[in-house]
Image (tube, rainbow, N blue to C red; front, top):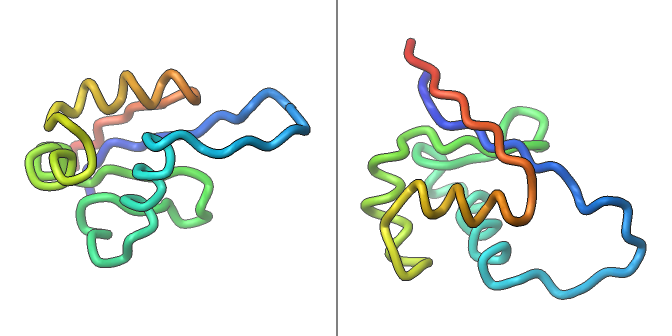
Length: 91
């Protein structure tokens, strides 16, 4: 299967919790929605998520949750919160 794998890195050990930003909340809602697992879903152990079909994800889902449909912008914003690992699997 092909897809873009997104690995989340962590918050640097802060003990104080704060309210997640709207971007993180919306991203979590996307990843956690089983009805769109063919486009975006958690990996097998639930530690990262995979965007299986980036073009369709950007075209069909991003505009419903964000003010754009640009996959690169989504990744760039995600990078401000955690380390993102992109892997394009062709096979």
